[in-house]
Length: 208
Image (tube, rainbow, N blue to C red; front, side, top):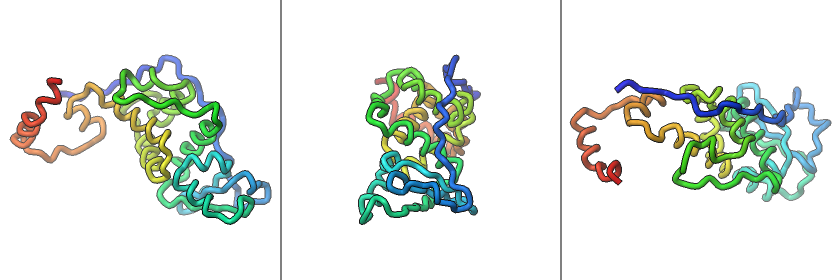
């Protein structure tokens, strides 16, 4: 059957607050307060360096472990992030800077999803997801979402990983295998006979 791709239901999506992390220009760290902040470097050929508050950076389990192994909090800390490019890292750090204060921590997302993702999350998270990660709420334009999922997984940022994976779950909910393959450009390497056998073996899932 022909794949159908919908636009997520977001009639009025607010613009995310302008909290994008500060970029260090030409390795000039003179204005960086290393007692409160760290510098994270992207993996681009010419790395982009972002200044982020230590407590925000600690939303990443990976970075938290690195910082806790340091002898002192006020030493100059510059951490290369080998698997994440500058564009993706910017969104990851934007999420961390918004959510690290206790009063802005993300609410847990109930699993399995009880409805569309945009009905279950805060206005800020909705804007974060549906403005750029899923560009304009168009499910077909999800390249940045996948990049952020991989970055959140590498950096061990649980809340961000939960949010972005829930977004993917919401996108595929109710779709056939053919529609999901079309949405994510996944090649079907099963023969019709193999596919029918898998359907028969998993018929109970569809009937429950």
